[in-house]
Length: 128
Image (cartoon, rainbow, N blue to C red; front, top):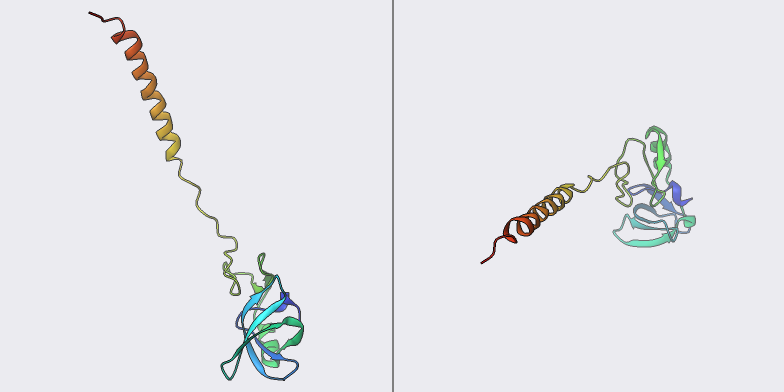
């Protein structure tokens, strides 16, 4: 099995023992997955040592179009905006930073220029 074919919650079978398990987490950088077995134990195993269960293969056909996550390469539905494996927010734009600082800076410069002009030309001419 390849890391690109793995997704969180996917039913798999460990090749060595033949035990059924579910993928809990995907570690794309190391090529390993964290499995949760039916007896409640967990293990971190390389993806070459697992294969999809027969029920998972049938469900995969009906799940619709898939795309790889840009961060962990796990398969996710095309319509999903958050990767179920790593939580990467795909296609969600962060709001632009506020432009209030530019307005404040402009105001400070204009007020400073006006204060300087008043001091230089109005107050400086008045003396004892």
